[in-house]
Length: 68
Picture (cartoon, rainbow, N blue to C red):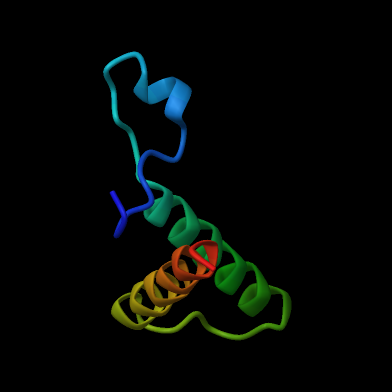
C-alpha cells in the first residue's frame, strides 16, 4: 500500500472493487497535463514509453511528498 498509496477511491473499494491505485490516479492526471500542455502549444506528445515513465515518476514523487 505504501508504494501505491492504496485505492484512489476508497468508497468504491469498499464495495469489493479495488479500482485504480492512488499512484495510478496521480500518473493519469500528470499524463493528462502533459498531453493538454503539448496540444495547447502545438507540440507533439513524447513517445508513449517516455510519457508514461515521466508520469509515474511524478506520481511517485507525489506519494513521497505525502509522507513528509
